[in-house]
Length: 378
Ligand code: GLY
Image (cartoon, rainbow, N blue to C red; front, top):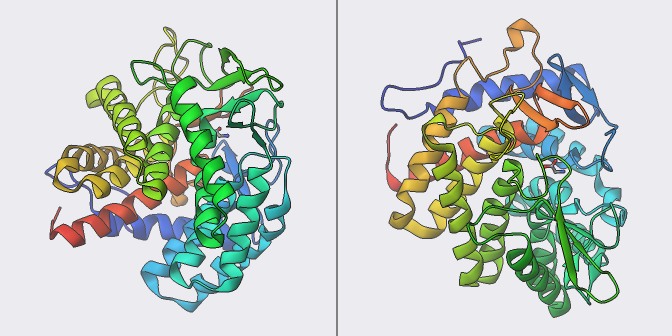
């Protein structure tokens, strides 16, 4: 296997080489552990299936990775695996005990539908969107989390896309209204005036009154948990993609500008921007998500998004150095190291996490497509 060093001289990244390396890492994962759902690593080895904090939410990322490799290689083996891993989570379309149905179904069945749309793929996406829409609170106009009827997370912005999509596929305007209202509520209460984000908002579920901010994975209620900010960049961009509502684009851009200003030349942010004594200086999964979200923005803005594209390219270049790449040869099973799931609960701290790996690969795949479209050679 070639050396995992994909940075090129101009601060760019050799996307094809980086994708090849990630592909081999995933081939090894699904060959060694068939049918298992990775969550985060422990000393570089995947912890599978159960999540000690949240209802399982990572099953779509492995399927999504496999769909990307099926698309880029055209190989039947990858396609068979992609269908297999998507089918493995299909029953979750009826799971109303989680707000994470977008994480489960967009990378998996969403990609399947993009590559080979059928009534079957459409129906699964519609079912998943309808199920998530059941968690809508009309008094507060928000989608609730698995924590409580009064709780909403910024993360839900990454899930609300499945309701927009279900509305578009089914023609059910109620779904579109729910998705729009939740996005407006998140924009109003979970994004502060400086575009930093609140992890969790608490509402009175009866009256809908917004009560207070809180956090689970961040430093404290008034701080900015960085992964939440990156979910907002990508999630509001996705809400704009489905709705064409400029307010969501403006919010995605404001969050992106803050992210870039606060991360700066480090390119990889900490777990929380406001933690004065972070145990670790890097939370690499937030960088992966940011890169994918910034590339979505770049695609939406055309030439006006070039700075976002350049920042994403430099982020991916940094992630593609030996400091961050897991090396199969040394027994590290994840693709991107130095990520953290839940530092407070001690889960997946300074490890690989499945969404960090997924959005790194998704971002490389997006960058490769944008470069092809713009005739760029890195
Ligand atoms: N559950 C989403 C996250 O940990 O970012």
